[in-house]
Image (cartoon, rainbow, N blue to C red; front, side, top):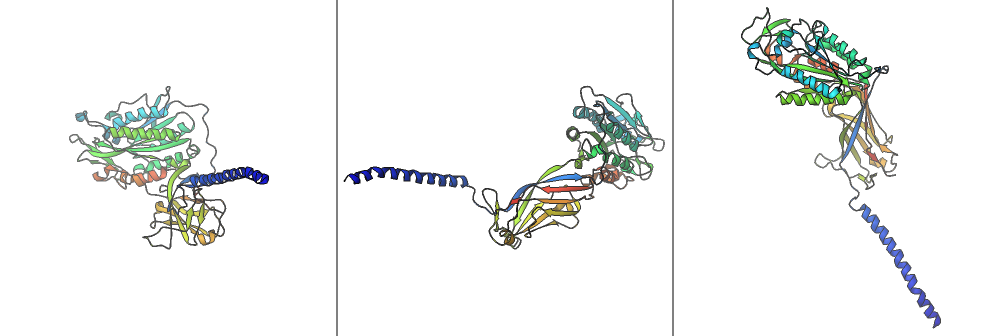
Length: 458
């Protein structure tokens, strides 16, 4: 009887320990279920990703020279050739708004606010047969524009030297880009512009260049070769090397080229100029010509599909993603991972490599249509029959490398023409496409690397 009482006294402790242990196990299981609740294994059909585009130069340029002291002044170069005077209204229509005059004022305001300091002063230069220093801001009247040539090449050489040697903080050139050098239209400025863009300080991203285009009312000019007939004058045909009479007020483009220190400075100037031009009822066009000097990151997307399925049911079921972000092949089917390349980075004869060296990983480049590298994408075929038996180590990344493709002038197509011999051509600048393509910074090669895409479960 005594033994039975002793045993019955210990029984409650044993039960209590068992209850506590069972409760702990249930809590742990509940915690695991809670943490994984809402994050089931899934078979995704798309991925968000990014590409990093890095320029590589084939030749090793010397380090850019650094100025001994910080410059404070700003330089403005203005085209004083006779044809540019046609952007100003004739004496009988002085009440008419001159977009050219307004834009020159905007250039002063925004160059100072974007690139200047409280101590900055403007250095003015006139561009005609030569480049001459002006005593302060010129009064923009027709009598100022008397030049018979436009040596933009000399202006660009002087502009480049003043920036690379640290004489000024930023410089702008205002011109119709019809350069004089025995060639038509903007061709005469291509060589000097290419020299600027290939300089070490532009390649390094220290200096940046941008181009703004604006169409403005053009009344033409008068000369002994083109006597006045009312308010309308003539335009000078670069191709015909002769004056031609206007029959109406034309819309003719002129340009503002800016070169300054730092990408932010130049882009800020461009944004402010576009906003200011739009407030005047104008439709500007802008491009950062030196955009390729620095690495950039571009967001994109990838699609996952079953290549054996029809176009109406491309959903893949072989590749799953766990809540932890790990991937696993659960079936032996193939899966295509298709990722769009950056549309503004076309490459000529690109080479592709994947970080996974497994036999079940085959990358290739596919173009949406022949001759359209801008619509290219990378397609990686993942053979799950192989990958599930031998999961590759590390994360899957893609690397594409090639020379920048020679592209058309793109958004500038509506600004360029082959000739200026008819009045219908005046809304465009002869050979501007050659100037744009010769001015855009083009590295020797571009290396395009993806963000991590997949990591397989071992």
